[in-house]
Length: 393
Ligand code: GTR
Image (cartoon, rainbow, N blue to C red; front, side, top):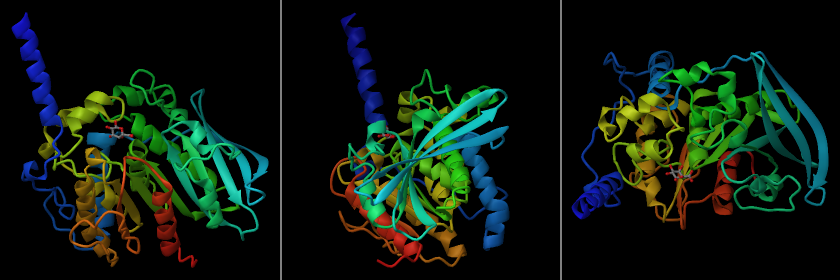
């Protein structure tokens, strides 16, 4: 019995050791799938072939192997809008928006928190956060203020600021995640390439985008979608599919977000699929401990957003999210931006801590500190949006 327990402990330890490597010298050699070569092994040399052949092909590979399908049909959508209070000593106004989506007698309700700057020429650009933390982080009354959603900073920069909570779409729980969008699309649950929680959150971001298209105070051509960590995986998947998002911010999104899987550094696919079996589709489980068998890697997800700007970040103490692998993902997406004649300003090697590279279609920083979304990060996102939207400050 004692020996058996020892053996079990050893197996657990070995599995853990394989599941997380923090030593750069132990990163295995790997070859990334060529983002500019079709599955028929044709070289992609033009924007046209990228758009018509390779991009749809890559999108489908991500859908089938990782994030699942994103159904776009529903019976109807309704927006219940009411004017809320004036907040921030009159500098902003709360607009309450309830987005209701109906399909086959079922309904999903998204509670969109929206604050609009006062005394600013309309329509205004907007930042929308996919909130994966507590709802108190996005308190529209501003009684509670959180760095996770520093609304004052965004408003004072002339932007509207919005947020919705992931639990409105899919509770972040392996037993209850289907209690939301998946009630509208139960057929997805039966499919190995069906939608799961991260897909449902991205679907929600697109419904918020639907709403923005109807609000004349919002410039729907200037919507920045922001997500942190698991929310950052969703912001990237949302922007990859829905080209109405003008800019994508993926903060500390790590494994199956902006970081390359093949480096097997920090969190790995086997680990994420075990801890969070409800995030990705059934097919993704086939790649547990088989990163090299994947027909894609995460640089290709960033490439799907091209030519729209992407800002990815890390934190110095968050090795779990593989900072170097995130930077390399952006670097390996550069060729696709090149097809659109967009030049990235990223250096060959990752920049130092707190040395952001912002004036570039592919932007990056590594912040001093822990895994988090902070005012420092947001400050840089605002500069990034100002630069791309040509807003001079
Ligand atoms: C971790 C998970 C990461 C990241 C993070 C978060 O436990 O392993 O992939 O998503 O949670 O969302 O904060």
